[in-house]
Amino acid sequence: MYGTGGRFRRAPLARLARPLIHEADIAAVAVQALTTDALLGARPLLTGPELIPQEQQVALISEAIRRPVRFEEIALDEAAEQMKAAGYPAELVEAVLPAQAEMIDNPEPVNDEVERITGTPARSFQEWAVDHAADFR
Image (cartoon, rainbow, N blue to C red; front, side, top):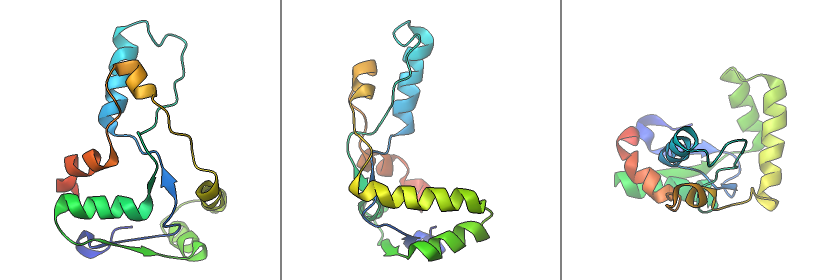
């Protein structure tokens, strides 16, 4: 969760890296799916162009908003309690956090499906952070 004024991010698993995708890339693929036959029957797995650890995500957001934002890693049990207090079902919390911990050593694959489908490379998380800087101010 973001703290007061967006100055910090408290979360478990600082090294958890995921190939986050910009919503504009999802939209570009949707345009192809809706206006051409190229994706008929297809179920492409869309990813961003690189694995970005959570602590690096925060650093890129900090850079984009030109304000210091720090990542504060918390223990999995503290994260679980916070999620439950926020209303997440216990079963979900008990499934998600261990799965995310496993992804540190076995990260999600990165692919070039966005570029293959749209002809344009997927946008980076840095681009996303710049595009969403106002959301964090």
